[in-house]
Every structure is written in C-alpha cells, then in structure tokens.
Image 1 (tube, rainbow, N blue to C red):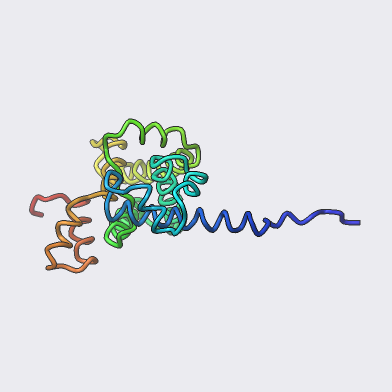
Image 2 (cartoon, rainbow, N blue to C red; image 1 turned 30 degrees about the vertical axis):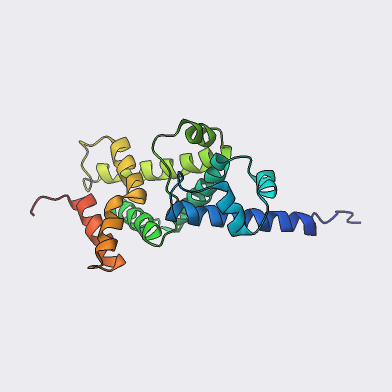
Length: 205
C-alpha cells in the first residue's frame, strides 16, 4: 500500500513564493533602469505593493535584493548556454552568448551593479546560489574559449580569463546605451556592430 504523502506546497507557501518572484522581478527592472545606487528599498516595496517591513522578511537588505536579481540573471544565462546547439563551432557559441547578453541589456532586463561596493561584493560572495551559477557559467564559457583557441578561430595569445571577462563586460557595455540613445540604429544593428568590434576588432580588414 502506498502511504506516500503529497508534499504539495501550502497556499501560504505558494503566496510567499509568488511574492518573492514579484519582488525579484521588480528589483531586476529597477536595477536595469536606475542602477544599484539610485534604487531604494522603499521604492521596491511601493512597486510591489507591500510594506517595507514585509519586504525585509524576504530580503534583509538592499544588497540581498541585488543578489537575488543576480541569481536570477545568472540562471537565465545558464539556461541560455544550455540551449546553444552542442554541434556549433566554439567561436559561434561565444558570439551567440555575447549577442544574448547585449539583447538582454538593450531590452532593459540586465541588472546594473556598481563595480566598487564592498558590502555588495561580500553579499554576492556569500550567496551560494549566485556562486554556483557563476561557476557553472564561467566553466562552460571557459571550455568554449579554450576550444576556440585550440581550433585557431580565437587568438591563443590572449589569456582565456581575459576573453571571459571581455564577454562578461558585454552585459554592461555603455556603448549599447549610447548608440541606442542616438536613435540612428535598431537594437539588432547595434548588437551586430558591437559584436563586430568585440570579435573582429577595429582595424581594417
């Protein structure tokens, strides 16, 4: 006789999960629009429609809110990497990743965090969910970089870590915003232009 008990989440648990999802979505949007420094906890609570005290029950600090947004985007990146066709050439895989990160940024969905913030950095480094996803994404990209260098499609003179950080930088490249603000090019054209400078360089061919 099967005596297994269903572990379906209670209504209260489902509501808590839904609220956390709403909070993280709001934080992601505000971080993309305003950046970490300009975003306030009061603004997040008001946008979600809950009291600040209730918000703190889910996320104890502004840094924790930003970390939750980073966990979300790193999971999206991990999912995207998994969707890239395994038979594609290594360099094509790297171009696909760079294109995706720029498309996410141009769509206003990429969190903007300060480069220098000891408290935020400490929070991220202590967030296991973030670190696990960051390591998984970095390992996958690192493998593709080494494979591209091995087949000669990517310069073997460049340290793999420099190429990896260059790819990560595309997710927060200010050139995208400058070109979009100019209003002379579509998002797709902007992505292709920056892809060209990233992978082909600036010198005449």
